[in-house]
Image 1 (cartoon, rainbow, N blue to C red):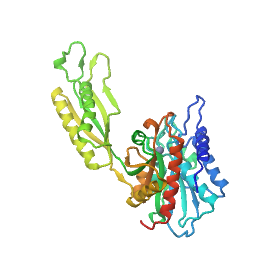
Image 2 (cartoon, rainbow, N blue to C red):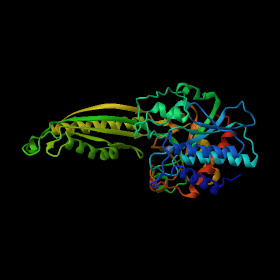
Image 3 (cartoon, rainbow, N blue to C red):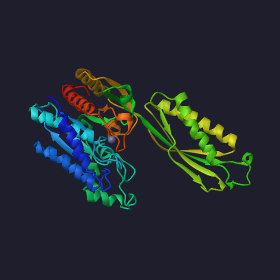
Length: 414
Ligand SMILES: [Zn+2]
């Protein structure tokens, strides 16, 4: 039983083409006509196998293949089909096409699993339109999802209307929840979106956890003043203070972080933002990610110490506000073991690693035993049309997913 690489590549290409824009770029923004086109195409592949895809209240596509014992909990696989604007061919789509390929191989070989098998396409993973993301997986995990008329996308379209028109039943989202006793485990194949596997020349990433993300907003309050008559020694320049702090972030991560620790200042707002005024106020974002909460806490402590010393030297006041905290989420030990065993069976080189990026698996792992399989992203590029994973790596990823499903089917561990 082998995966068919040419079939997988052709489907990735065809789904990608569903997002083709007039300017030649490709986007399948959630709830857009392009997204719908990709989803319809995806469902048609299952219909050709004699299976009937269903769409739940949250718009998630779910397709089920009966097992020998349908009272057993199901093995779930899946990912997302929506993309960021001008996104790549593999982020999300690979996991969906790979899940389809597992169905295809099983159907064609006539082999029946013990457990029922399910493929899921999660609605709006990226959150590119309404800023939140992980919509479908939130619903499947039974989390309340506020949908509002007040939230508007870049075109001024309100969220409630967009979702309802797409077929999402906003009043019945709780019906999309899946009960944990009905799930054996959840598996997601995804491109790494980082450069670790590519750099280390490893074929597969066995994901051990999804990194936690803490987000903060730092307000620096100095003094706005005349840019001509205020001597350098008299200034309380909030932007210079921010710049000094931002430059200290990489050094602090180097000194106190682990191999996968990252911290980023991605937003800067300056007031009054004028060519001839010493900046009086500066608001910056700070984001810290790591696979261990203790490391994230240490980095925050050290960055706060740095911030205080820089501010006191420059006579600027600072205030750090917590925006959101999302702890690291470990994958299930027994599912990790099964993925690892499949890599060994297939003779693939692999690396156990955390995922720095968010995935639907982040939410799924809190409710269901969950595992993720990564394949290399060339140069670590993702969320870009330059995103690329080599055909051999795609074949290896699909093969390891198939093997993992077969291994897990024989496992009674929970
Ligand atoms: Zn993704």
